[in-house]
Amino acid sequence: MELIKQEDIASVSLFDLRLSEGELMVYESCIEYVLNNCNENDLYDLTGCENREELTTYQIDLKNLIKSLVNKNYLLEKYKE
Image 1 (cartoon, helix red, strand yellow):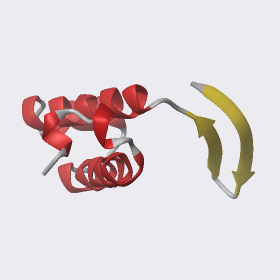
Image 2 (cartoon, helix red, strand yellow):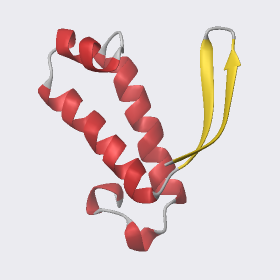
Image 3 (cartoon, rainbow, N blue to C red):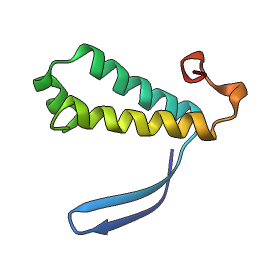
Image 4 (cartoon, rainbow, N blue to C red):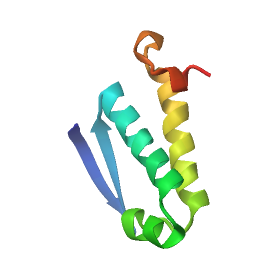
């Protein structure tokens, strides 16, 4: 992972990052693990997300990014739906 740029806007820090497809898939899989194995209290403690729906939104965004931009030859089977 490489940081290209950081910008602070109000109370949010925005990052432009350079990531490999493997890194994106690892992050998405970690979110999937947390969603499937953690209760609501653990979910907040681990991620800072207020609820399962918020974390699921991040996972969906990552899945869509992976499915739309990653070379199909490098996709794991779970992304080929």
